[in-house]
Length: 628
Image (cartoon, rainbow, N blue to C red):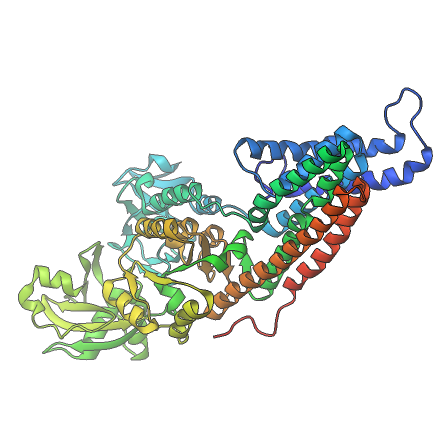
């Protein structure tokens, strides 16, 4: 039961339900206190003590019933529909206390769940907040703030220190660093110099940079991701809640029993008595209580649950989709080998490579710089740095032209030189050319997590996953290397955020899916899957798009999340089914005329207490929440 479904427009659902529940409590208290006033005066249709109940039914009950009618008009109904019928019937038959008790039960359950949901903001809001509304455009030596939409390709834009870059472009003037982790998922500060490429959405460092826009702002990489994100948000899978699934069969059954009892006895109050005791409060209250307990337990384990529905359905997911960097790896690639060509020394090649790579936006640049620092090699200041997509990195270092490219590009452009390369190995590599000659080949590895293989095997053995996919924007060789290391057979390499979302949608159409990733480029796919799990805190946008966030980058936390979901579903089913069984016994008594409406409501409250006490067990962890 989702509190926002079918609710009339107005204040936030959680606040509204809390006000209604509080009003119902006050109305019941006022009614009980006012009973000594006696019957109504002549000509007055109700007793004074009933006035607070009527107010609660008219205001709170009316609001709830309108919301239920709105849902019903769209062909949606769940366990709360039975409560709505009870509210209307109680008013018609003058059983105001019983009706107000039902209002309290219905609004209280929805208020509890709204408390569990409590999301800070939407993913789209987080995306929008990251982008500036204006750009500092410079023309003829004059700097002016203009709307972002007015920036055209070729315009020069100044990005002040610590500002977000508004466009995709190339550095025209200035030296500094930029944090592109929000877009690339790679947590590195990338050095920038004239000729370096920059991405919209990147956060500038301590120095102002002048950037030449390569394309309009509405055609930037960031804008494209935001469009995909908006589309994914609109197409987010609607999860059927556990309470609604049980209520789909229980509600018509209870109505049928109530109708039969009323028809057989000829007493409409008998119809109401059956409905009141049949009101599925274990679904309306016990399940939200279990959810609150699960959310609290997860929080104590460093797992932030943003959408409680994911806890209810994660146990039925059968396909797991993983991003590579930072999830199944540590996100820190290292230089594991540098093979110099004839006529070159290793340190010589590494020094030239590192001097140029500090102005590269590629995440492997950090590994090169780390290796040069470890070797104690001083860096030279490069000039004429240029990095074009698909063409590699080029610059002049100490009067020598240094070019960094890939094996495939070299084979296409210079097959004779490519024949001098050493045999291919797993992982990533780059080829270094100095003054047009092959100088060396560098090899990199992003180390797989130590428990990765065991965790992947555990997903099928203990959590029922049929398939595990590895989907990454990295190169084929590195992705294949990781897949073999952790035991994943289905691999998709070189995938853009748009392609990731298509894979997520395709897989979700066939089975319930879990997507685990970090970085803003994973946000659309997180939204498109049944359960989106953000790994770490690299991106606020990713955290907003996901149904849950693992604050510690640890696969054991993912396993704990899965176990918490399983525990929630098991305990919630115990509370719900057990409560329904007790309610069925009460329905039998009411149908036989042995239980009037108010007594039925009180009995239902006793059943609620038992169901809630059992549901509270979710918040108390077992000895261990992980078993691999």
